Amino acid sequence: MKHVAIIMGGYSSEYQISLKSGQVVYDTLDRNVFTPYRIHILKSKWVYVDDHNIETSINKDDFSVFIGERKIVFDVVFNAIHGAPGENGQIQAYLKLLCIPHTSCEMYQAALTYNKRDCLSVLKAYGVQTAKSYYINYGDEIHKDDIINALGLPCFVKANKAGSSYGVSKVYQKEDLDAALDTAFREDDEVIIEEFLDGVEVSVGVITYQGVVKVLPITEIVSENDFFDYEAKYEGKSQEITPARISEQETKLVSELAKKIYKILGLKGFSRSEFIFKNGAPHFLEINTVPGLTKESILPQQAAEAGITLAELFKSAIDEVLSL
Image (tube, rainbow, N blue to C red):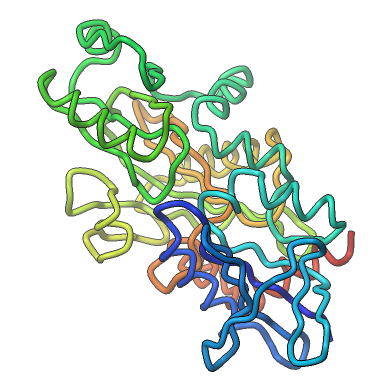
């Protein structure tokens, strides 16, 4: 029986979503094969939480925990932390030093994909089409006319390193840029501003499943709000249509591109990448290497459409890293 630490929480605004994702994994894992443990990794504490919600501190020296008189050393970590430190490479580096296998991508890949600017720069070199963008660091002088001349209006102002649409605003007028930048800078000290692409938005899950890189059925995003923001993602303010209502040719194009990006970036485990079609061509927006696993999340919907249960999905992710 393998001891599985399901890490959840994190240090970012996404911690509550992560706790929900982690709980889904905990509830789903087959107790005949795995012994799962809920591990809350928060700024204030790293703790094991039992079924009575009693907390026991984790020993960070070797990532172990005493349950009664018994010391538990984990065979594998299931990473369900969205944002820092689970999606930006920090936890991956820590676990690598301890030689503990985990279900997410490696340290460098996590750091690269979590940084929207750097990820776009790498992928552009491979011919991946993206929105035009403009970068600002905290403390830089803001040249609003330059931004608008480069990107037009409306445009999107985004925190460079954040997820779940935290720190994102859609800006229609020059006068609204300051407020949008303030919102983004509350999440990160780097901001990316992108042109608005008017087209069908799709989300593509690419995973390693039973040893094979697999593209899941594509989801079309139709937000009731102005864009696919937090409410749309997690509070039912969107339609997530799987499979997407796009042509066979568009399906082929975006599936091949998503798989190509997964391989270019050297990913493993789960991923979910976002695209918008412009003039028939998929334009890459961003990629998540620890996508949501809640009941409302897209990747579980896509797996279900592919005939993969959550138990099968999670078991495959654990089996994959234990076989390396």
